[in-house]
Length: 533
Image (cartoon, rainbow, N blue to C red):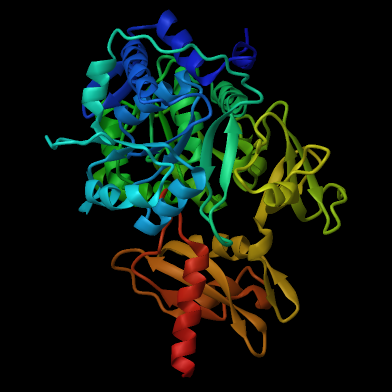
């Protein structure tokens, strides 16, 4: 039976219970050289669910998880699932105002949090925050501190111990109607939106993707650096359970750590954003680690240029695939395949997963013919339930026919492959011409001195908008702005060549390591304004 058929009608809690029953000794998580089995995670999440229930947590309650990738996150997630609660995964990398906003907006009643993260004292933060958030009743801390706790703050291990052998109410879940997760977008336009996904959204997309990748119990997966985003939650945790594979946990974004873990644990599947693969190539040139265990690599969460794809196939893994992933679509929408023709494998994001429909729409919302640039709309099993507490925002993106407007621009070719062009809101209008940042970025990423690049538009009195290339150069490289512009002129039309070039040591980033495009544009604008002043 196909994996997608097995998950029909299944809840998140049932997915783990089923795997733990069939394969209790199977290795689920590999954390700091410690193997944790499916059976152990099932037993511990049962105990934690009993303790959560004794605190009054019930179906529909929101449970925030503010943790790096660790066993406690996974155990807490399934404890909430067993009670029919809704998880709100958040990264400890968020600023305190961002965390406060998301906790308030989600109306979380319980938070499982680290005690300390990269010098930040989360215990003190929550001690100050609790009086300001009347909905937040309890905080569960994960850490090494042996501290005194009051009637609102508990230690994770204490709740595990106190819940052992205790019962909790059995909850009936409707996988297609009941929400399981609220995932916050990066908030490039205004406040972050809470994407509400059902059990079926996440499980069905994870099953389809796992089948496409042919994941199995012999696989060891690396590269998931956060569970707060949809790919980490879907393919990272659920895809691993559904396929019976093992997930290697890592807390950092660094390519050096990822490559070292591949060699150490003989990882077979490497996930990551394109930046991770780009920096991984540089690391591998210096370290020359044994990566022969890898059978495939998958990039999602950002544009991957043709040059990057070819370089990864030569230097890291011969089977390099690219996915178009969307939070509102419960992760993967399209994916490339090794049997695709080379020009499709290198220049597109593949074809839709089974059951996913794609349309390309004009400005009036009408479908365009093939080979036309327009807004990508999708319909299928992953389309979100809604934006949490934002009915107008939901109506603006989910049409009556069930298609979700993604805000991305693309082209659907005659063979059904999707070509990404860029974000609709990121198009730069320079002197009346539409310039798609991604096209310019692809060209610049091929420059040997460019490690990472983001192209943004900035106001200009003459041009309307000027094109600014923000570049993080390769360490030790010497390159100038005029050289970068000349490089672009070889293959780009004059109106697409950057008007400005800014070199930076690093970019401001989201919690999962992607550059904050809007913040970069603000930095450049502020710099130009100060110079004019």
